[in-house]
Every structure is written in structure tokens, then in C-alpha cells.
Amino acid sequence: MTQAPEYVAYARMDELHQLQHPRSEARGELNFILLSHVKELLFRAVIDDLDCARHALRHDDVPRACLALSRATRTQRVLVSCWESLNGMSADEFVAFRHVLNDASGVQSFAYRTLEFVMGNRPRRQVEAAHQDGHTLLRAELAKPSLYDVVLQYLARQGFSMPADCVDGPTTRQHEPSSLVEDAWLEIYRHPDRHPGAHRLAEALLEVAYQFSCWRATHLLVVERMLGGKGGTGGSDGAAWLRTINEHRFFPELWTFRTRL
Ligand code: HEM
Image (cartoon, rainbow, N blue to C red; front, side):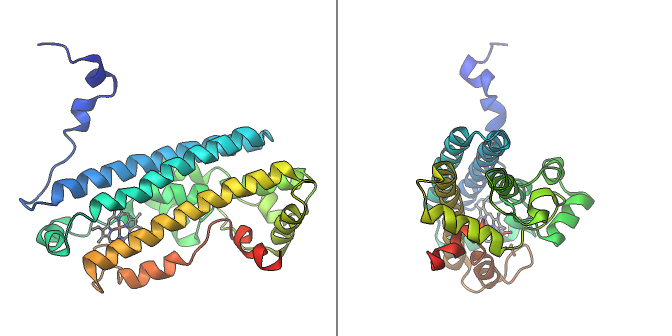
């Protein structure tokens, strides 16, 4: 047997290309699976960079944290632009193979859920489900404070007053918007020259949250384009449900303090 070239062997390209198994003859299904794989892998790349930022911040290393956040943001932009490729499929092409998905839905993506957990969205229902039968990646994430918790701990070390549960509450806690946190961001943006590190960090974090919201908003548009008002394969009422999710913002006080600036 001839040996695979190093490019193929190094990243196991042959295994990678064996993972796509369309269940129908429909034209768009292969691309749908490929794009789903690409997005899953990119979720993982973003998780890895956010984890790197979290690690740096625990050591008060703001420049390194900002570098990792800006890498995450670059990948998030690629994630948003992936919808472009999926939009090449018309609604009738999607309908032609949608039945083979059965109840498969992105809502079951453990990588996406891990990403939400890293960012700090840890609703009790999702946390309980992860503890019961979640993937190991998800359960491992719940043992760590979220990126936002680590940011607030950093601000506490810089002398800002922070709610006690943000600083040393259980890692499985859902972050609740707090006026103390909003006051801290307001002070940082009123006096960026007094708090240059925190200001730079805030801008990098906001960009991550912004790109996340762009991904969600574009997903919603794609869903409307493909399904109109139909329900989702995951059991939700489709676009109507995603519209409510769309209103959620990561790092909420970083958005709300602006009204007072
Ligand atoms: C034709 C393309 C797509 C359609 C029509 C679609 C539709 C939907 C719908 C209706 C939901 C709501 C849950 C449900 O009832 O299923 C949903 C959730 C979701 N989809 Fe998609 N989707 C598409 C492509 C994708 C792709 C390529 C990904 C990336 C891997 C993805 C990731 C997700 C995620 C992560 C959720 C859960 C969102 C949350 O929990 O906040 N979707 N999708």
C-alpha cells in the first residue's frame, strides 16, 4: 500500500472526506452537510480562542486576552459569511431533502451550546440538560467560570465594585444583568484614559458579542428564506422562536450602559 502524502496524513484529510453521507439524491444536501461541518469546526476554533482569552485574563494579561478575542472575531466573521454559501440553495431544493433530517436540528449542537456557555449564557434548563446527558465538552465547560465572569473578576481586581455572585458564585450560574456592572462600564467609557486596559478589553468583548448577534440574525434570515413560517425539525415554531433568541445580548451591561453615556 502506498503511503499517503504528508498533507493527507498530517490532518487526516482522507478521514475528513469520508464524513459526508447525504441520505437523498437531492442537489443541495451535500453542500448542506459540508457547511454544517465547517460551522461546527469554526465553533470549536472560536471556543478555543475565547478559552485562551479567559486564561490570559485570569493572569491580568489584557494584551494577550485582546489578541485572542480579535482572533475569535476574525473566525466569527467567517462563520457569518458561511451563510452566503448556504443561501445558494433555493427553498424548493431544501424541501427536497428536509425530510431526511428527521428531528436533527442545530439546537442539538453541543459545540454551539458550549460556545454559549463560554460566553456566559447558561440558562438553568440548558445547564440541567448538559449535566444529565450532555457531551463531555459541555460538562467540562460548566466546571469553569464563563468568560464574562472572568472579565468581572478582573474588573473587581482593578478596584471596581462587583456583585458578589459574579465574583465567586457557582460556575453554573446564569449571569443576571447588574447595575453595579453597568456603573463600572460607564466609568470606563467616561474615562478611557484612566482605564486604558479595561476600555480596550471592553471594545474587544463587544465585537465578539456583536459578531455573535450577526450570526444569529443571519441564521434567522436564512431560516425565513428556507422555511417561511414552518416549524423547526427540533420542535420549535421556527423563525418565531429564533426571533426571541435574537434579542438576547451577550455581556448585557456592555450594551445597556451606552444609554447613560
Ligand atoms: C437550511 C438551513 C437551516 C435552517 C432552515 C435552520 C433552521 C433552524 C431552526 C428552525 C431552528 C430552531 C430550532 C428547531 O426547531 O429546529 C434552528 C436552530 C439552530 N440552528 Fe439552524 N437552520 C439551518 C442551518 C443551520 C446551520 C448550517 C447551522 C450550523 C451548524 C445551524 C445551527 C443552528 C443552531 C446552533 C441552532 C440553535 C440556536 C439556539 O439554540 O439559540 N443551523 N435552525
